[in-house]
Image (cartoon, rainbow, N blue to C red; front, side, top):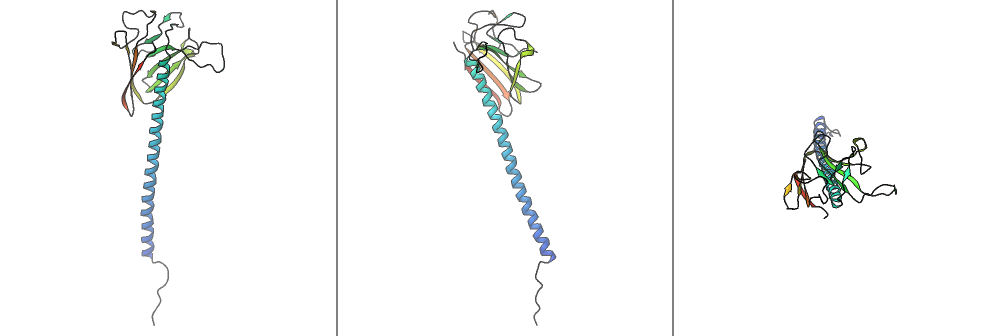
Length: 206
């Protein structure tokens, strides 16, 4: 008489099935985790690139509307239409007067605006500074906008009438109150992660 084998899985077969399932689960999790990490990295890179493009648009828009209009600081002293210094505490690296300040609320104010760009070395940020008034603005009224993170350096140069590059503006020998005291072009060198050093030259309105 032939005996029938009991139906079901033996312990060895069960262990093999559990091991295969564990290996397949580990492979699936590893693949899913890699996909999620890649997606997260791609989103982060896309966001950083979008911030960089926005920063360049801000700067180009501001430079395109620079006007030859001096301002007075909070002490009543005249400041040139465009002014640039080396990295000095409490002084932005580049400041200028621009036109085209939108006024959707129809407020009683000028359409000119004082704008500045500065590098916050401590926090590695590129800042855009604006003020609610053109003359007599002080530190307490400064509006700071963080345009870009992971910034490692910011430098400006300016082309004069002789097409020579200057590292500050107004150049030596030119009075800050001279009419027509605007450079022909502006060069910005921005160093930021992960792109490294980037250079852009922009013509000023003549």
